[in-house]
Length: 187
Length: 162
Image 1 (tube, each protein chain N blue to C red):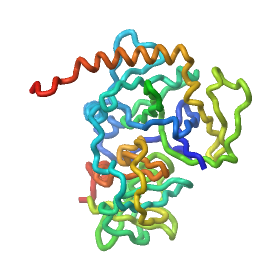
Image 2: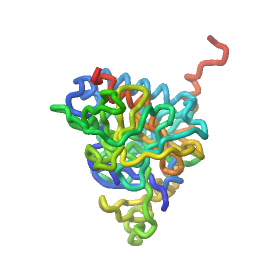
Image 3: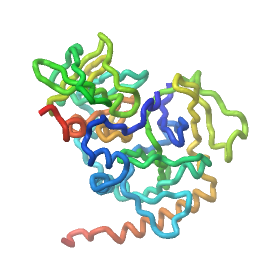
């Protein structure tokens, strides 16, 4: 249901610039505001806004919520492998794992959205490896679907710009990778 | 199962029916002209259209406004004069109709509480978007947005003027 942790909470260990920005101050925050103000005032012209297209619908850990990843952004879906937690890391980045032979960060979208505390799913969980970076997201289940309708509205999340009328929250894989790995990816 | 936009404000869980919400965006830089009414936080431009951001905490008499941060959602309401409210966290959720109950009569000012929903996370207060503003407040807001639109128009670059 509603955020169990503070919305916008970020993993510990992030750079001081980000910590300051998340608290609503500093040059990075000002730059974010300027960029967002400019983008919001401009006409809507995102490729993901077109109706149709194949999506991977990923069941969130929370009832009635699903994440939608564009299929072309997904490299592989595998049963969740062993996830090695990183010392000192808390928040949505759960740790490192080998998915399809690639060493990647494993992140929890529900936690990143501030909707739930970070948690590695149980045995039935899956890792969705993204093409854009060494990053996999953990989900309870994944299913290929065809997007029937265009997105209805913005979701309020930086990495998931739109939500369609069926409640599928569309994830922008590029933004997600930039947000999670932009500063401190595994390299 | 009806869709709602659930959000938190002043540690309360509130909701609006999804059909009453145009979109949710992240709070940009707000334009706050002198003489801004206390119930308004400012005006933002959404695809060239001015959208007033009201202080819902003032309208509802809540203790706190949204926390300062880089990812503050603004819930924009449907309507001829679009306006929004900045909140602490927002999500689109389904609520089971059986768990949505009418509120006690005259429980809140202007009857802006449409229903109360029982969820595993606690009670959610479902607001009636059409009753968040009184008729006179809505008229003031419309006039304010008209003036804001005129001001924004002054900043448009003439076509072919480069």
